[in-house]
Image (cartoon, helix red, strand yellow):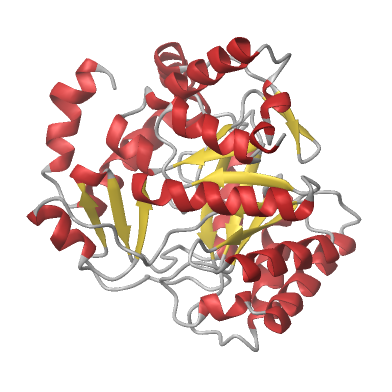
Length: 367
């Protein structure tokens, strides 16, 4: 963690409401997004070293990307690479605009380096996001790294209508992302996690892969899983993903389980409804990554997310079977230098183990 972040920014942000501090940070970053000079300044400060890996049919400068939820409305897409990220996931996006759940809906547990959120897919809706992305492209302000779109179910749509809801959002955004993540695992939309059951899930996957066929495209589609599923259900979802030709699995979403709080502030945070992200999630995330990798014999790409805030946690996810990584809470608690710090650490590990590249480390813990 940088000295300036510890002494200046972090104390100020920690005194603000969590959602308010997030909005302020995103607003500031969106200003850099519109300035080539601003992005070059950020890049000089925070750029990560190269640690290339081929995954999902694409070349990534290194494995570490920005997780969904940080830039829901794709407001600062071109600024994130300047903070060292090799890929970006915007969203979650729903077909219809929605305000999300009542505030307050985001809380910090600083001692545990965890966040609790019950945001509920607050976003401007697929059509509005599409229009803003069309405008961005017309201005020549599109990121030079792969971009993923996270797609969720609209709150006012029931699960029987979910396949059409997901597929229509996918259709709307198809030309405005390089890959897509189907989010059936957020704990913050009532009934959403029921879509992880076999029949409902297969209906969603079937309709979404029809959209890819419609465009005769090879853009990757991934499925995001809940860490709260048992191992048998996780294996079934991996099988369904392969059956319908999906390209990858994101492991994992936030959890409804709670760690033992260390103090009053954490006790208050963990008493709130919503999903926990950050360091307490990492152990289960690694277990899910390992289970999927073993069950599929490494035949499907895994994106590791959950509690990645250091080169050690990133390395454990890679050795367990993750080819790509994402972080969110690590950025909140450790500041913008965390990205380059993690990648430098991974690069040192690759050299230490004598690998020719990071791809050789994927699943190494199973060999």
